[in-house]
Image (tube, rainbow, N blue to C red; front, side, top):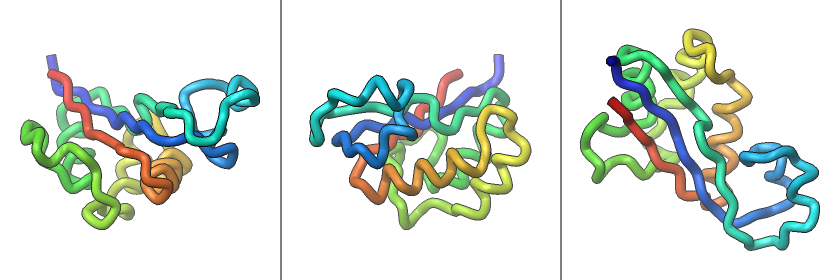
Length: 114
C-alpha cells in the first residue's frame, strides 16, 4: 500500500467561506459567525509520489508531525498548482480555497496516511 495524504482545516465560520467547507453552502444558513467548522480532504493525493510532492509543496516533512501545521509563507503555491494538474482529486480552485482559509486564520494540517 502506498502513502496517501490530505489536508484538514478547522476554523471560525464566516458566511463568505461557506462554499469552501465540508457541506453544501445552504446547510450553513443558520450557522453563527465564529462557530467552529471544518474542511476535510481539501487537497488529497492517493499515490506515494503525489503525497511526497504534496508534502514538499506545503513546506512540511512527511513524517515529522512538528511540521504538519501549515504556514502560509512556507507553501510553494506554484508547485501546488502544478501538482493539481496531476492529481485528479483536486484542482487549482482548491488551492485557492486553502489560501483563503489560511488567510482567515484556519488551522490547516497535513495528514499523511500509509
